[in-house]
Each structure stands twice: as C-alpha cells, then as structure tokens.
Image 1 (tube, helix red, strand yellow):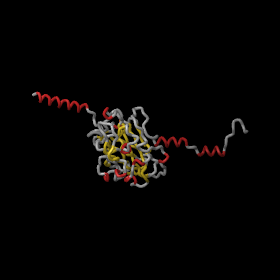
Image 2 (tube, helix red, strand yellow):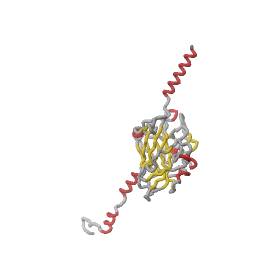
Image 3 (cartoon, one colour):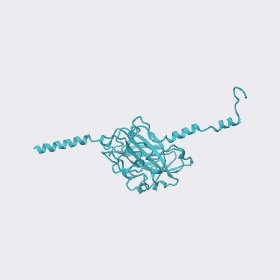
Image 4 (spheres, one colour):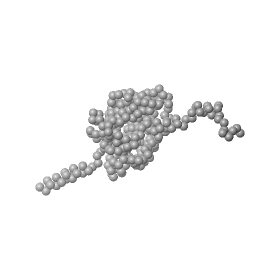
Length: 296
C-alpha cells in the first residue's frame, strides 16, 4: 500500500514538474514562396537540400543566445545544434557554410514579395507573445545559381524590413490550412538583378529561463533568392553589416533600438533628400541673384 502511494506521489510530482516546465517554443520556416513563384515551396525542414531553396534548421529547432552574437557564426543562418537548458554557443554545422547551401533558388521580381509560413510547436504558429522581426538581403553574385554554393558569412547584408515587436502582428495571421503564421516581406523595387541570401530573423525577449542565462532568443534563417530586375541600382552604397560581427552581445528590450543598419528604404529616402537639384544648381551657376546690399 505504502509503495503504491509513493508511486502515485512520484507520478503527481512528475506531472506537476512537467506542467511548470517552460514550453519549448521553437519556430521554423515551414513553407515559403514569392510573387514570381506562387506555389508554396519547402522550407527549413526539407532535409534533402537539393529539393529546397531554404537552408536547414537546427536539430532542436532552437535559438541562438544573445551572449553569443559577436563571434559565433550561428547568428548568420543558424547551426545544427542549439543548446537547451544551459548557456553555451550554438555549434555543429553552420548553415551559412557553402557546403550547407540549398540546391535551388527561388525567383522574385524586384518590387515583389516573399511570403513565409512560420510554424512553432505542432499545430501552432509562433509560440511566444513578443518578438522583433527583421529581414536582410546579402548578394551572392549575378548568376541565378550564385547562392547554391556560397558562404553566407562572407556577404554584406542590408536590411529590408524591421518591425518592432512584429510578433504581435504575426500571431494574428495564423492559417490552420498551412499550419503556421503567414508573414510577408516586400522586396525593394530598385534593386539590381542577381542572387541574394534572404536572411529572416525573429528576436524574442523574456522567454529564456535561469538555466539558459535569461538570454534574448535569436531565430535566424536563410533562403536563396534570384531577383529579376531591369534596374541597375546597386545596393553597395546601402548601409550594411557582416555577420557575426555586425551584432553586439547582450539583451535588447521592448524599447531598444533594433540591431543592424538603417533600413534600405530609409537610406534611399535620405540620399534622395540630400541629392542637389540639377535645376537649382544650374540657376546658381548661370543666373546669380544680386545681393540685397547691391554689388560690391
């Protein structure tokens, strides 16, 4: 009788501990598509890389901790092993490496958009309530296959989207048919054609437990795009960073400035505002106005 009671107590305690344990709360890109390729394509969990244009997810679909941003290549596109329940850098295979490239590349027209289906725990979208959303592009080269054997840590990345606490918007767009939250990323209309690494990232705060160091959780992932365009504008003059050194270690917060460079669209707007007007320049050269104090 006593042993039966003991076993019952142990079972109840185990269930209670399970109830109190943190939810795994991981997220990955389940499907993606572009306005030029309207069929949903496999995302990170298509383990045969030759069948997808999106690079892999980690074995635990985990995150990169904010203590390990500056020197760990996992922040570029993720890594095969992400620690859970303790503080350590992510390791294993780095998905930025050339031999971890996906075998395909999705086409998108400049000015089009990329759509993503983000799945969390089974049957759910993104499991956390808060998080910043960012998206970058880094050029691989001019050919349609340039990203298919490319070290993504060598690219310079310019930011094409940032939404502070965008997860609150993301969670409103759950699709039961697709099994995840749907999110769109517009592609700038004035980019030059070529192959680009599409780097998508969610940064969640306040979810890491003590054994994990109370770190912010970074979920980076990388797809491969070929942008079709008639424009010759180069993104070389856009503010950009390289990973991993482009981010600084440490936690953010709800009101923190988001990491990375100025948005591409904002930098273009600023440059256009500071560009001298040709008509005014000609007037100043050929039709100088007289001083109100008269000629010297």
